[in-house]
Image 1 (tube, rainbow, N blue to C red):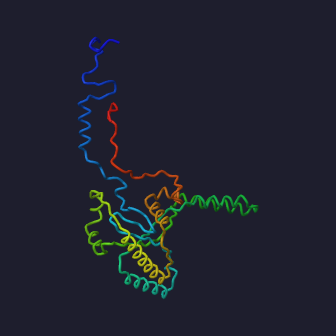
Image 2 (cartoon, rainbow, N blue to C red):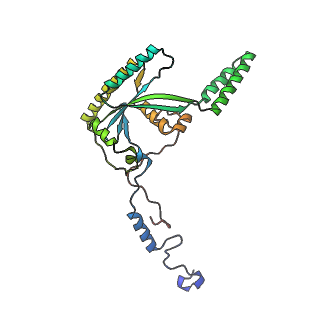
Image 3 (cartoon, rainbow, N blue to C red):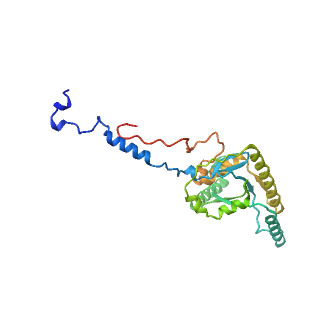
Amino acid sequence: MPPNNQLPPEQQPPQGVVGSGSAPADQVKNTASEQAKKPANPNTTQSSLLISEIRDNMVIMKDGSFRAVIACQSINFDLMSSREREGVEYSYQNFLNSLYFPVQIFIRSQRVDIGPYLDRLVAIRRGQDNMLLNVLMDDYINFIDVLAQEANIMDKSFFIVVPYFPAGDLNNLKEQATGFFGRIFSKPQNQTIKIDTVAFTKAKDEIKNRTDAVMSGLFQMGVKSVPLNTKEIGELYYNVYNPDTAVREPLGDFENITSTYVRKGAGNAVQPNLPGGVL
């Protein structure tokens, strides 16, 4: 093949091109310098979460505070007599007055999956020999199926979040007065909170004392409660942040997760390759 200077003018390659598929050297330098000047974008989904770790039946927040979650069983207040209602109201009033720390009452509504229940009814219907019962079960299965398609059957769960702030509850209330949306839309700060063994042990003891106090107050009202362990707290956060996926794929075991998930990587993000494979 003859050299480039002996080719006809219409076959001459453009000036400044290194080779086929490569970018000019000046353009590569300018693009690399522009990308180096661009600041990294820390606004990721993981950065918006305030959770740092779940350990020893507690949630460790990024600001160094702790949380414990108590699951509560509901009571039917409407079916009580007037005297029973007054007793519950006075017990609730005494419960609130006895608290020396703030608490959060969390009510979660989740759609119920009727599929397993319908499959169980179909299996029972197949083993039924009575023709009349078969007809009645078919009508009932069709009724439940249509009802589940036309209306959202919801299930409500009740929780009480018990916090502990090593810096003090009053200081935390002052920080919350700055505004919730102001903290969300502000730039995230990559600060690492280090908790030593003494502070962690003290937090565990204080969380346990507060949890026992809350459960004792709930028991006076006739409300049964139980603290959530580490696995149950993880399932609660999974259901809250994935309401649609949790109905189809409930999180039963952390080691056997079938759905895809995103984990925050370490280090800086990798820049995309430039044209010509320079980087």
